[in-house]
Each structure stands twice: as C-alpha cells, then as structure tokens.
Length: 301
Ligand code: GLN
Image (cartoon, rainbow, N blue to C red; front, top):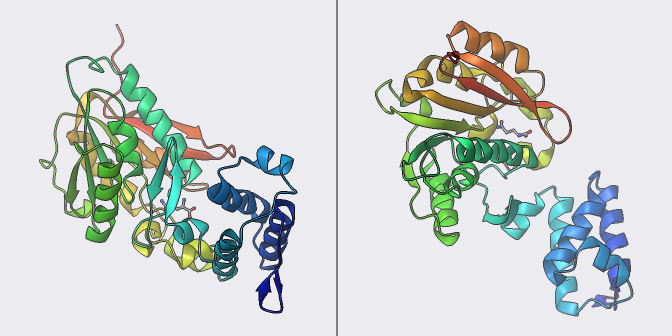
C-alpha cells in the first residue's frame, strides 16, 4: 500500500485483500470480515456492493484511515476501540476501554429480554414494567429494554467511567429515561429493589486463571472487572441466586449471560436457592449462553 513513502492508488479489491492478508499474518482469524467492516465504515457500501465495485479507487484520505486501523489491529487493539463504536442490534454504541465491547451473544440476551417484556401481561399497556440491568457497561442491555414501550429501566454499574459511556449512549439514542446508578452489585441488600418484572445481566464470568489465555483484544483491552468472575467464574451468579429473588415480582424473571460449560453448575446453584422454571438458551454459535430463571415455580390451574 505504500510506495517510497507515497500512497499508491489502491482499489477496493486491493485494499480488502491487503487488509485481510495483513491481519491474517498478525494471527487474526477474522481479517476478511474486519476488512469488509472497515470499508463499510468508510464508504457505506455493504460487502456485496464492495465486491461489485472492486475496481473503484479509494481516496487518499480513506487510505490513511485504513492504514491507521490496520496498524492498530496488528497491535491487537479491538477494531471497536479504534473506531470508538460497536454495533449492537439496531444501534451503533459508543465504546471505550472503560466498557466491555458489546458482543453478538449479548444481542441474543437482549432480544430474548425484549421479547419477554413485549409479551409480559402487564405491558406494554398503561402499566409500567420495571426492569433492571446489573453491570450495564456500555448500556447495551438497558437501552434494548428501554426500547420496549412501557418499560421503566434502571441500570447499575460499579464503574463511574463505564456509567459515563452508558449515559452518553442512552442520551444520544433518545433513552434519557433510563436511571443509571453507581452501585457495586455485592453492596446491594434485599430491600434495594422490589417489584421488578425483569432483571438482566451479563456479569463477569471468566474464571480468574483463564484470563491470561484469552485473545489479546479481550485480555488487554476489555476492563478486567467486566471479565473476572472469580475462581470458578460464578461469583456473581452465587450472589444473585441468593439475593435477587426478593427483588422480583412473583411473575418476574431474570435473564443472565454465562460462559462455556457453566450451565450445569448454574442450574444446580439456582435450584438450590429455590428458584423455579430454570432454562437455558443457545447463542448464535449453538453454545448454551443464556440462563432464564423465575422466582417461583408457576402455579398453573
Ligand atoms: N463474553 C466475554 C468473552 O468471551 C466475557 C464477558 C463476560 O465475562 N461477561 O470474552
């Protein structure tokens, strides 16, 4: 891409192949997808449109941007951090090193939560449903719930810098009604919440000893406090299993994201704490990823 310090003219096709090749050589598997993402961001063209316009020349200014993104990716900085945004459902959310980059698996949790709220008997009519997001980070789950009419959302996080990002996302996207609170989940008592319809959370769930083995994009750039779930990764679930039942209405539910292989232990944990109707759902890659629990076993007559 560089000839004698001068930028040579480059076509869309050449740029795509240079980016994918350079990222591949740096040990990044998703080079092709990321190349498409970078070009989409600069040109607004979809991957199919990009292929159709492979001969189109890229303006020098865009080339400089591509080179800077590629240099960042070679240092394994996540593309979302380089761009300052991450896609989440129908939105483009602001992200920073203070928040976990929203992931596609969390979109599955958001979609399930939204579906549940839409179908819930007390909404979306005049009665307001009460929802809580624990460890909101970028605010992605809180915003998804607030997009359902008739839902009042509160969101907590132990990090004030994360809350600044969440508030800014909510404001920019028109969800000023979300109540953001600076709280550490472990400081919450039984009377801190009551009458909630839905609790969602993507808590930290990586066992501490496994963090060193994660991809550098995650290990070195996502906030450690958003990843580290303690010795076996289940510290947050243990607390929520004991504490959160009292916060919910009898008809309420709690939806939690969890990590690979954690489903059996989580089910045991929530059964032992007296929760009912426990089920799990898979993410887009077919892995068990979402735990759904209710405070009581439904009484069907
Ligand atoms: N999904 C993240 C990862 O795989 C972990 C986020 C979390 O612990 N909640 O890196």
